[in-house]
Image 1 (cartoon, rainbow, N blue to C red):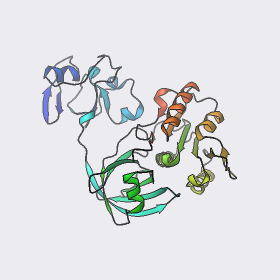
Image 2 (tube, rainbow, N blue to C red; image 1 turned 90 degrees about the horizontal axis):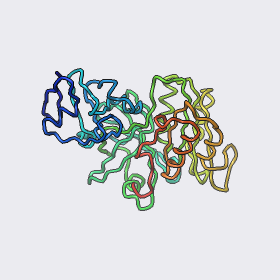
Image 3 (spheres, rainbow, N blue to C red; image 1 turned 30 degrees about the vertical axis):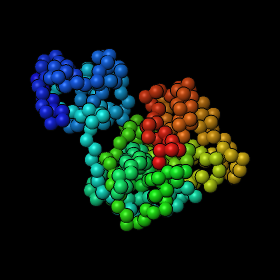
Image 4 (cartoon, rainbow, N blue to C red; image 1 turned 90 degrees about the vertical axis):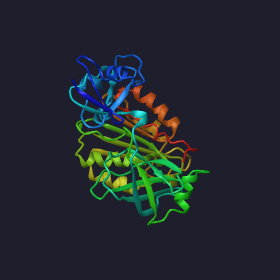
Length: 327
């Protein structure tokens, strides 16, 4: 018998009883559906120990790595501290702005230094809070390092309360409040030979930068293809940095794409996802990361799947689907 702790209360599981069975027996109402580990209605997270492997069947690698599991098929093998996905307590920390740099006419790089150590995966996102409580989510553009710094690429959006404040009023030395990092769209170690396809538009490049940096730092040997798109050449950024990275790493390929009429040298005409998915004919065995406009992400998901990519290998966090009226 194992002890299960949820929201400060501890329950004892009986032999041959799943986590869901134990909680329901104790009148703890947990969402559930199929009872076969398929519908994910009862998905939970183990806070302290890895859950049984059998309870993670069907989850993608990032969910498995973060100890998500199906409560309905989880027979606990040891004591577990549990968290419901919709009620996990959010931890907030304070950070100070140490750099602010304009990358394009409407995208600014903001680098902050956190007061305390922060654990995250490259490509995740955090919620940024202004003093008055206004909150927006932004992707982390760098890989984890010892200096507790986080980098964000924040695009100014029409009527965007937070983004306009960042561009016009936030200064070096200002403080921000950050939530703990979230999201499953990040680099995974253990499959170093797997080819990677990354497609981003606008500031959707931010999480892809972190993922690429993390992959190369961990000696990823498979090919890494980045396609970054904009309608105008002034919307492309970090072009020189990406090209320099490609010269240093023979397995990294960078393709800047312009969908408008004003195409300049060393860029490819066309929308980034169209160029990418016409360049790479077969995506069987590939891992795909998509960050940008909702239409691009949804369309690319479907095409990547039709070209052979497994659904579990296509990553596009809900946050990374950038909507023009959310920031």
